[in-house]
Image (cartoon, rainbow, N blue to C red; front, side, top):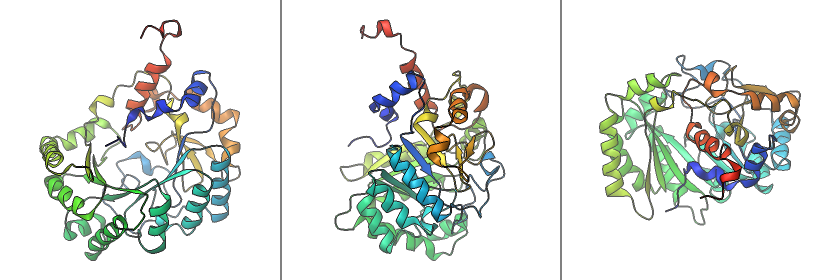
Amino acid sequence: MSKLYADNKIFHFSDKLGDIAAGRVTAPVHVRLKPTNRCQHKCHYCCYRNSHLFLNERFNEADEIPTDKMREITADLVSTGVRAVTLSGGGEPLCYPGIEETIRVLTDGGVKLAVLTNGGLLKDDIAGLLAGRATWVRVSMDAADAESYARTRSVPVGEFGEVCDNIRAFTGMAGRKSVLGINFIITKDNSGDVLSFLEMAKGLGVDHVKVSNAIVSTEPSENTDYMAGFFDDVKRQIREADERLTDDTFAVIDKFHSDAESLVRDYDCCPMAQFLTVIAADQNLYTCQDKAYTTSGLLGSIKDSSFAGLWGSDALQARLKELNPSKECRHHCVAHGKNLSLHSYLEADQEHLDFV
């Protein structure tokens, strides 16, 4: 089975690598687009609603991209050559009133599409649209039973069954092109249920489950401390599930790891910020998903400007080049490993490349 989460995807974009090496800021390959901050679930660990995390610094649940502005944004993403868009939160992207039009415009324009969703609205026409047009859809879940799910998300007990029904119907759609995965988010409360959840998920027909840890603090060492009491047991359950459940139709993807090793960032620029950027529901651009809705991650507003205009501006290009992770990013960073690889690539002595 091919790797869906390979960090070395970046090296398949030789033109972009050449632009970065030459100091040119060109269109990002991938954009995280957050249409709305509204959500029908209230997960207790949500990084945008957790006062212990800095991702709620500029977060306003009422923010939503106006539909006319979204039409402008999607047209810009197509025309500037953005390759992929992931619709995510903020809030629940399928709550957005213009979601079907947004999906159609992007995919008709040749942009690959993905969606991160809680799955509650993954049904009816929107499910059929995504099954035929999205490259992948990933449902966020955190419990193996209805009572735990309701308690964690502050939703009715019946919501768990509805989400499971939506997943089962999606995976069974005739002609489905979209990969459907689940992100199982590990907390102290559900850490003993990993194996049972993975068994249940395979029964729903999903293509894979990514197991990842909830982020409880901006400080990586505090995340590591939070997981210390159950880390080894979760790893044991993941290994057992991989041995028992993995086959040609189902994969367990282990992204449950300690953040302690990412505390030290001894590089002074962030090339990944030119591969991926975030357009948020407050109509601001941010450097990445780990700095969305933060003052330090703010690149500028497109409320009175266009995405293409802001991205091509001297001020934004200068900001991207001066972004210094060793000083500005002492927090959880999903791009850290990719940045290490990019720096190794960019720092290779050109005169010695042939001596492989």
